[in-house]
Length: 385
Image 1 (cartoon, rainbow, N blue to C red):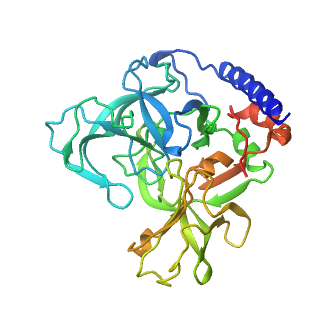
Image 2 (cartoon, rainbow, N blue to C red; image 1 turned 180 degrees about the vertical axis):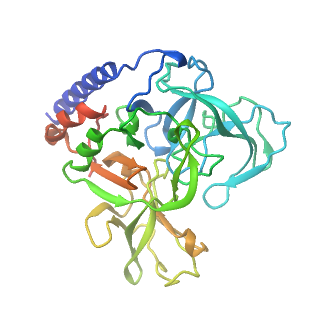
């Protein structure tokens, strides 16, 4: 019976999503035919069956959308839209490192004309002309061949670009929107069973109101980075720190529970683990000493409700991990990509508010479905416990 209900649920939601796409005018168009819309919805393709790093979106460097290539959609990526180097003879001008310093990407900046597409090269967003991208020339000092995908089959990471720079940041912030829309986006990953999610770029007042007032919605204030990043029509907008909000993380140690309020990376590419980056020179320096890798992990609003919690291991078989030797300014927690299985996540870059909307069970989805389908296509999946 449960299987029948879930199948019906997915079918009805799929029909509603296709209807909404048609209503939004998501058809093949040339760059000159685009009018600025209030928002655009781009598919997120779930290509694997286990890890969040398999979330992909497609990007084209041609106005007609042709030859679109896949990028990992990683909301924790640094300040850039990474593109494989097209001229490895050019000397890199800068570099950046992921995670604990590996890998190191060396790149130069180049303006390109970019648009987001479907997997079949149907353009969905207007072309952003001469947008600054990082042309990756080397990875860990090794030359990257021109126009050759990485080992994972993608052309790099597509970051959410919260904390970019005035010369290098994500395409998502540069797509022109119609008047009345807030800069920002909604990430709604379909999950490992359905194969497709959605990324809505641009927030209408209706979208903001519906998700903000949804049952169980949690709101967190995002932290400004004090950087200016690329926005629509070449103007600059305020960026945000990689840890985009503060939460309270609690883990089990050999001496009992340990808690700290830390900046939190809401990261689609976060992997299976709950990772705490915390330095030995922090205060208190031994806050997470003796943590139990197979112990409990709880993320919550400081002094309030629980966002995510598991004990023994994460739902993807991960564990609690503490990485030390961080500078205090780099202290943060990454909840892992599992959070995006359980929440629709809305980033409002103008109000500096991050909203988490719990994805209900199919039996209770009717409370939200009608309102949500009016304002954005929502890909369905069953919330795990």
